[in-house]
Image (cartoon, one colour):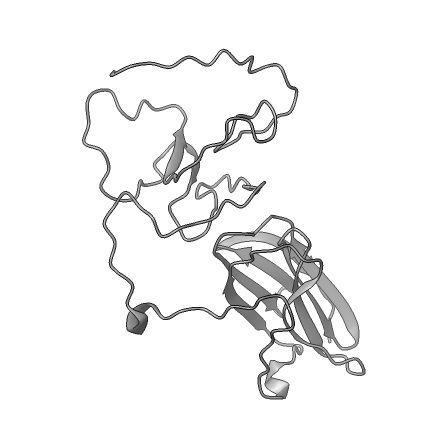
Length: 231
């Protein structure tokens, strides 16, 4: 190796069990990293490298024995089957920076997103019963990149005070996501507790009439399920 480094911090001096990326886990914010990181991977049970090697030129795969793998998607998520939650304690987020070459932005190919500033912005779609949940299946799906944790921020809604069929998708105080909806006059709710701020997240909420459940999927991973009765 080209050199070595020493850290004399007592790793057992605090009882908190918390693997930390980007800072020293001894206490919040110690020796915080200032920079970018990509493809953080831990493989247990395998010495992946045993001699000099050519550094990767593309995303690392999630190989057998990988116990944690993150930072190589537009969202921040553990890509292993463990699906460990990764909580954001500050303003960490994905940036368009990479050690690999990437294609330049093309508006015709890449499009864009809609920005809401949290101060009265809203868009309204046409009034249609097609947007109401009923006794059948229904799926709500979107990408979101929250930049604040305002209490009860609304993602989208169709809220009928006097009708049984309605829904409201909202973001909790820490950027968490959830839905409240009504079928046949009965209200149901399901959500998932994880800080989603400063990162792209794909959210899919699926109401399945076959098994009578509503499920929250975050970045392709099932996070929570609730049951509901017939309409």
